[in-house]
Image (cartoon, rainbow, N blue to C red; front, side):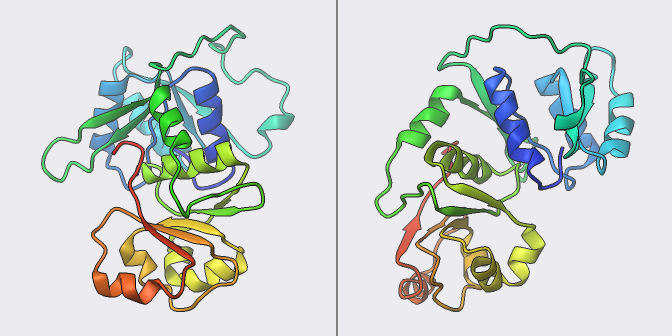
Length: 242
C-alpha cells in the first residue's frame, strides 16, 4: 500500500524478481476489504510507506498471528540504509517458472464478494510480447501511468514501460483528471491508456501524443469520431487479466 511515487514500480519489480506475488491495495479499500484480501492471500510481507503506516499497523494488529504479515516500511532514502530491512530477508536463489504467480487482482465486488484473478509470469510475458498495430512504445517514449494500482490496466502500464525502455510517468489521478490536456503537454506524454470518461476531456491535438488506448468502458461512436483527428493512433484495448 503505497502512494503513487517511484517506490511503487520499484517495489513491484522487486517482488516479481524475488519470485513473489504482487497484490496491490489502495486507500479507497475498506478495512474489511483489506482483511478479506489478507485472509485469502496470506502475504508474508506488507509493503507500506509513512503515509499508510498508521492504518496498516492498526489493521495488522487486528489479524490473527497466522494471517498477520510483517510490515515493511519503505521511503525514498531507503537505498542509503545499511541496515537489513527485515529479519526474514536472506539472500537465496530464486527459480521463477512460467507458472509462478506474479499478480493478484481483485474484482470490484459490485456483484458480491470480490474475487481474485491470478496472473502468472507466463501471462505477463505473453502480454508483453503481444504486438498491437499503432501502439509501439520504445526508448524515448513517455507513458502516462494513470490508472489505480488495483486496476489491472496499471499492470499493463508497468509491463509496457519495463519491457520497451519507455519512461513511466507517474501522475496524480486527480491532477490528471482536472486538466488532462495540460498533463499531456507539460509531461510530454507520448502514450496513454485511459478510460473513455477521462479521454473525453482531451480537447486538442498534442504534439507529443502518439497513441491512446481506450479501455474499461464502451467507446461511444461520437467520442471515437471526435478523438480520431486529435490522436495519430487511437485504439480500443484490454488489460492483462482479460
